[in-house]
Image 1: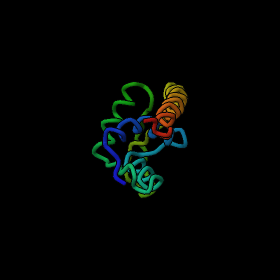
Image 2: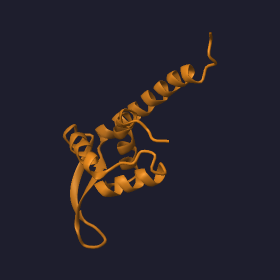
Image 3: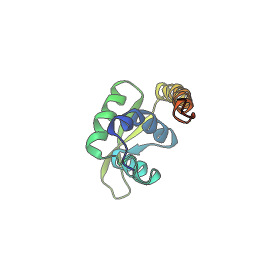
Image 4: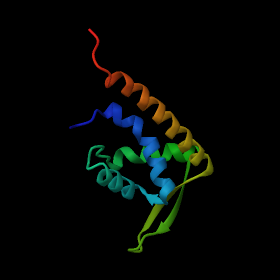
Length: 112
């Protein structure tokens, strides 16, 4: 089933912060992992990812550093900051509350 881009937008920041809490990653790696772990349900693309990375970096939630990849090429690796970890914790709680509230309505039997 294809997901609405509007719904996907709301998942980008928490998903990026969660993945970067696991370990530092470069942009294409984030795209690849999201697509794999969601069986392509989210279908992230690099072009839409980088503006979000830059925004999170300017907000101080992540930090980018250039480093050499296994093949010797230079890549910008992003890592979560303390501020980003705090934001992730808050977002996880918000997501749980939102998900629970929406499910209470969507999964309730119809009353007519």
